[in-house]
Length: 174
Image 1: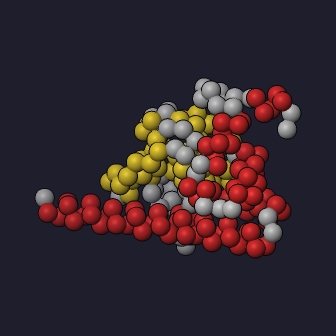
Image 2: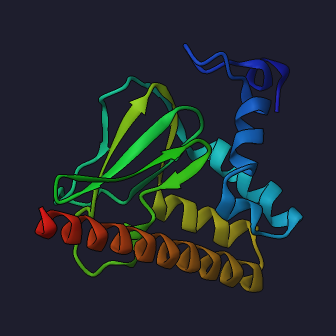
Image 3: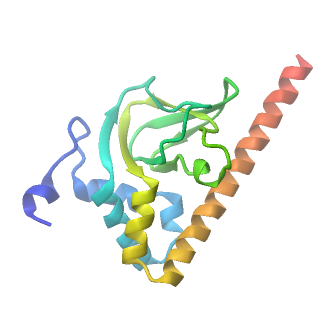
């Protein structure tokens, strides 16, 4: 990587590539991988992702919208996740978002994700990530990555389902 690219900063964020890489490597899903896989996945994401500064109030994904096979990493800032117009939770950077869509039969977004504190978001295409991972990782490592992503998505789905159930119970008691 040339020095110009390495020292390039994302407009407005003040984050250069090493800072972004550190945040990517701090994403819980990525932290769960062996070190060598973490480093390679971090480089893949830096290579394929499009950084964008988003302001509070901007929507990343809208519940019911057509899936675009896009995921993202919230690198700085905060976002809230809503389902059925109810705020379920707020997440802080660094975090992976948009992963549930990879495990649903419907081709629509399962929740609304909206920025609540301005930040840097790295958008990427899931098929491109899968293609690059297949080139960089061994078949065993690719399986480990898929299993880790599936486990992460299942945990998030269960957590959001529990929160939604609690919301419905609270509303029925009012």
